[in-house]
Image: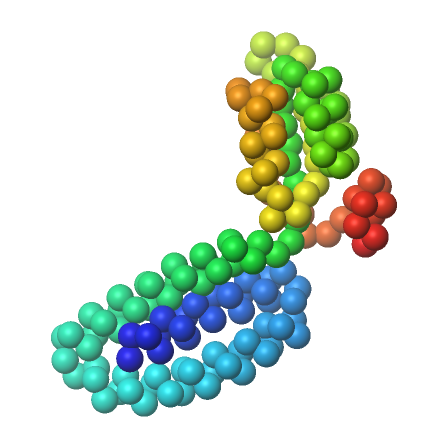
Length: 163
């Protein structure tokens, strides 16, 4: 029962992420597998839910399934990130990032202690960890803000990826 529940919830979590990211066809295929597992699991659960141990196993396996679904989504890393970098090492940071084939846009912002340079770049989510390592090698005190853009068009990114 627990394994079925874990697989069902992990697939459910992954399907939800894929739907949010716009992967409708893949999400619908996963949902067919997901509902088949759900029906199989439901028949088992209904026979075992009359004991406290059955309820505990069901609840625990649901939580484990969520964790596995999140883990799978992080490993697949579908989509893109936008990263804003506030640094005192502007020229060096831009040079290093561009050498790694990242498009970088910069502008001056006003911080509490005066003007600060802000850099903006886009990357595949799979590149995130390597990108953070590159940034920290140039400026370990850089302030970073990352988010997932839903839609974008034009600019360096289109030239790089062909989107």
